[in-house]
Length: 435
Image (cartoon, rainbow, N blue to C red; front, top):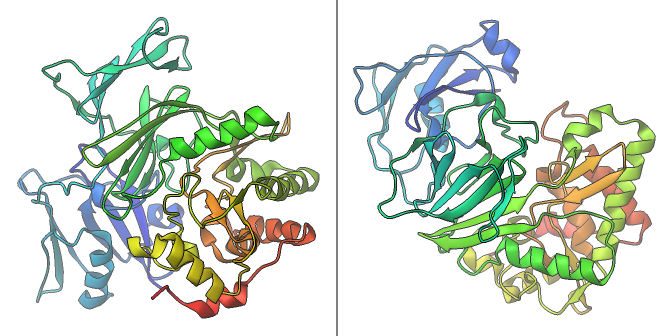
């Protein structure tokens, strides 16, 4: 089996990463102990995820176009070409030569949908977001601008960028801050640091007690509900009655240049994925039960259309078994759910749709619970609540042994069964992608 190990190098957005392809799945220790069979070098902003440690290679100063070449000794060039083709954008030059060398050249302008690099550093106390906003550190909050604590006794204040826009540079690389499988809630080495990336489509940075999220809004997401709208809906529900869980507050949101910017307050605690290994069985059962009960509580909120809270399209690619824009219209989703055997004639229920261990924040000492990432929340048939826990590996633990990575969603599904939620796993598997 061929599996990649990825490591990020220091430098600018055009720095390189090493992709070490091994003949069997291995972790970072395999790379450090010299068990590599071959390596690939590609531009760091072309990859979906990174590891925090690994072998280091320096860039060649003679290569102004950032061209990278590598040799394969035990894997066919066809296999390597297919592998690397998955990692780089389709508009980048990619070529094979007959002496078993693979060349990747990054001499193309950055595609317009890349969000990495949306935040740049002006100086040690101010930054530039999307060329229009300046978060700066100040001794006190501003009464007129969005402000939040920086976690070190000062405050971030968000204001419009001056004209002309000041010069800026890429954020310092800080490998330990990066967590490929979920938000990292540990303190950062820099005031603002990237903590999550979803390829070129979305990225998250932490700035003190807030997260700055940037998402590319292309034609496929033009009619999708924005997260701040869903959070306003949840906060309105909380104002009516206690819900028993925390959610972020929206500090700022706006759209320009096909990007959606939102600044959210941090929810107290650590991710369930981080806390789970240290929990005893009693505490694990407590949080499993809480998650199921929260699903049941939210299922009391009824809707008439498979959609987001404001009636716009629900971008749940697992439900649609497709990720094309036309797959997410309410009518197409309704037809697909009926095909899977869901009851579409009764009232639809509200569902978070991504209640995995990296989107749940917990404090075992107080047994508190918070929920983040409400981008795909909306109204769905009741059967989908339990079914998605069964079929979506995106709600697995991001790290650990394969034998127990799916424990969270499997056990929550069992709790939901006890609460009367049905499932249509067979119908989902047989339905195939939406035509």
